[in-house]
Length: 278
Image (cartoon, rainbow, N blue to C red; front, side):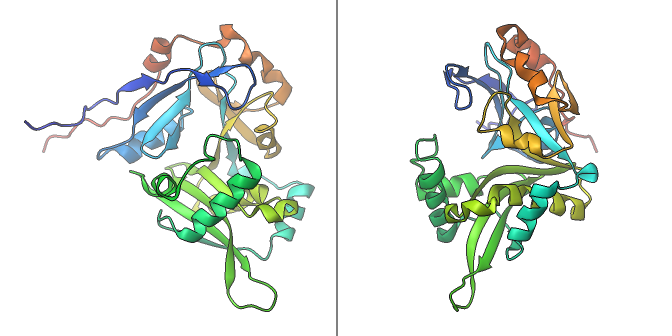
C-alpha cells in the first residue's frame, strides 16, 4: 500500500509544561509538520503568522490562559543602530562572517557546549549531545544557512577561531534567526546583539525587508532585549504592528486574552498547494 502526505497540514497541540519565560505559568504549543514538496511555501506563510521552525516542525505558542509570546521582527529599511549598538559594531569589527550550508561541525558543537554551560546550564537544551545538535542544524526541509563568525586567533598564531554561530532560515520576506550561540568569554562584547545587527545588514544586502527574532514576551527579562531593536513589529491580533510602548502589552498575560484552539486553527491562512493539472 502506498502512503502519501495529506494535502492540508494537520495541526496538533502539545501537553502543558512549565513556561520557560514567565514563572508560575504553563506553556502549550500548536504545531504542524514541515515536510514534502511545499515545505518552503508553508514555512514562508506560517512565519508571517507568528510560527517558528524547530527542525521539521512549525510551532506557535497556544497557551490556555496566556498569550504573552508575541512574534517579533525588525523592519530592516527603517532600522538605524542606536549609540550602544554602534559601539557593539565597533567592538566586534574583527569578526568575519561566512554563510554556509546547514552542516554541523565539531567546532560548532564545542562552542555550543561552552555557551550552554556558561549561560543556560539549567535550560531545556543543557543535555543536548552532539547527535541532537547535528539534528538541530541539519534537519531542515527549507532553505537554511549556518552563519559563522570567526575572529583572529591572537597571541601571534595564524588562522581564525570560531566565535559565534547562527542557524538562519531564508524566507521570501526576510531572515529568521532560529538559534544563535557564541563565545561566553566575550561577554563584554555583546555578541548576541552583534549577531542581530549583522543579520540586519545581511538582510539589507539581500533586499529582504525583515529579520525575524522569534518571540518577545512582555514581563520576561530573558526576552526583553528584543525591544531594543527599533523599529520592531509584533504579531498581535492576527496582524503585524509596531510594538509601541512595551508596557502596553501586559494584558496579554490575562486568561481572557486567549481564543479557543479551534478558532486559532480556523484563522490560519495556508498557501495553495493543490496539484496543478497539465
